Length: 342
Image (cartoon, rainbow, N blue to C red):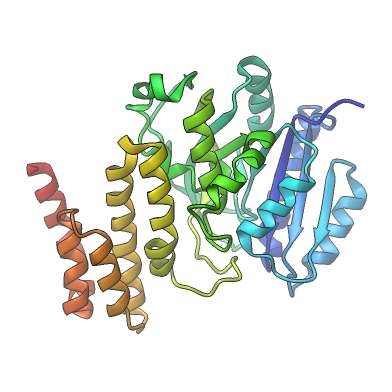
């Protein structure tokens, strides 16, 4: 029996209309590229309360390359991904959100590049989209070419050749977006124990940690220049965790940052400052929504004490969160001015 090359894993929870569009996208590409023996699709249904179970059972009965797992409880995003990886038959894994899409020809291109370069890890360039119809059948691209490159980049040895990534914009950040990463299953599983020394099992970004360790240790990183992946900018209700975006950024990302400090130290400061910006945004959104965030802002201030001007921004949220949120546009302009001077 021919070995499966790529397993697409889709954790899903209560988003049937998005899931239908995503699965149809994969079915069309697999059939168009005659990839039925090379690619499989695994769907992990996190105990959805809508009609997801009926749909996934039906679509799996119609296509031999689709397998479905209806979990009796919500495993959360990281738990669902781990489950699907363990069940997969592919040499490589592509985790995908139930609201993410891929442009025509993406899977065929990925398979060809895997055969040609035999990478250990792949980063897919992405575009950001917003859905106009709550299903991604009608969407708008709001940010094209996230990596700001126009051709593939291959890094044989990460420790030796890391400078090849200098012109790949925010490549490390992009790794926490599910559709932007493809990894070898055996290396991912191999580094699970090490990753858990840094990252709690319930951390939303647990799976990212294993890839960071793997890239650092094993290299053979391929960055795809063509912008095939379409990543929907969305809220976080697909996870079983009810925490706010600010909470994720403050507590989940600090664990990733500590891992980066040990395995990719030259990326540490950039990563910390980038996520400080996301955390600040989350704090302001929570404030506007009437949540009390001063204790979170104080924690964020303490975690970013040595990073200017982020430290002052968090301190301002401790002192006057509502005022700062109302003045956010002016503050962003001020921060950009300060950064350009520095």
